[in-house]
Image (cartoon, rainbow, N blue to C red):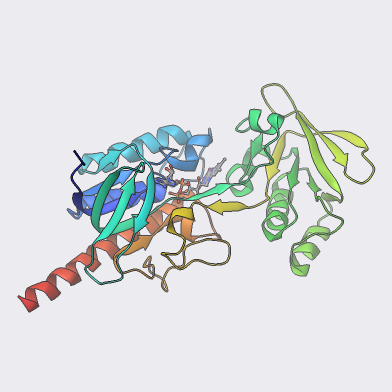
Amino acid sequence: MSEQIERIKTLIIGSGPAGYTAAIYASRADLKPVMYTGMEPGGQLTTTTEVDNFPGYPEGIDGPTMMVQLQQQAERFGTEVRIGMVTAVDFSDEPGGVHKITVDDSKQIEAETVIISTGASAKYLNIPSEQRLRGGGVSACAVCDGFFYKGQEVAIVGAGDTAAEEASYLANICEKVTMLVRKDYMRASKAMQHRVNSLDNIEVRYNTEVDEVLGDQVVEGLRMVNNQTGEKEDIAITGLFIAIGHKPNTDIFKGQLDMDDTGYILTEGKSTKTNKPGVFASGDVQDKEYRQAVTAAGTGCMAALDAERYLAAIESKEALVS
Ligand SMILES: Cc1cc2nc3c(=O)[nH]c(=O)nc-3n(C[C@H](O)[C@H](O)[C@H](O)COP(=O)(O)OP(=O)(O)OC[C@H]3O[C@@H](n4cnc5c(N)ncnc54)[C@H](O)[C@@H]3O)c2cc1C
């Protein structure tokens, strides 16, 4: 016997800071949100030990604990948190139309509003020593973790604008920054290259890649390899930052939602509205600029308020017609 289609008011896809903040606001506004957590319950912050910059935690907090607290706060107001992946969507083009969602390739849901908070995943080099030391000195976020390496020697991998910006950020905090650039030139804009080159404590190594991250429990050094000569060199560092880009988790929305050329969802003006009525996007999935927990949470709040106003406008239109 086929399972009955479930009808809900508000569906939240993703359980990072954006999703949980949307859930807190949506449940307090009686939108009875149902959240699907995806493959990473709690989102990216569950991969870090120390969150020092989220307001309200004077001593800092570890990422997984913070996300459990956000879940508890959302559940306190009635959010239903479910484990599951949204695997397909069919969004309506009509204001007041119903959006069809498939979970885990089987369960069918119809939702009046949808809040997308599926985040963006940092790209890694995917070599074993890097993966082993993630959280032990290997990080994909200089703004988040740079402070922990104050006065120390670190390295950064990448050649684009973000890598150049993060290298400059680290140079203000750290003793020395070695920047590994795979090609014999940087992709970053001329202005960003100028900024990097003007800082005495950044050393740029062209044609250079990571051969191995050294260290047992924590990063102690880096073995670099020159991809032209094959020559290897070890340097002592305590932190390695990977800045080779992010991939927004938007594959299932392709063809349905407007996106930029790198797959980030486009939203209207200062709102979280997508090009489909009743579908909103919050957090890193629509923000390649700031990518912080607090900015994700801020747009999660906006998405819930936008959803609430959308439903109220539909209801008053229906009341006028009847
Ligand atoms: C190592 C590291 C350290 C960081 N440290 C800090 C810090 O100290 N301070 C700070 O402010 N920021 C930090 N950040 C950045 C911060 O984690 C992100 O900006 C923030 O988590 C983005 O929140 P989000 O809700 O948009 O998405 P995410 O946290 O990325 O969550 C996305 C959610 O969507 C779910 N999902 C994806 N696809 C689907 C699907 N198809 N169906 C259902 N669910 C789905 C995932 O399972 C996940 O729960 C750090 C990031 C990293 C990687």
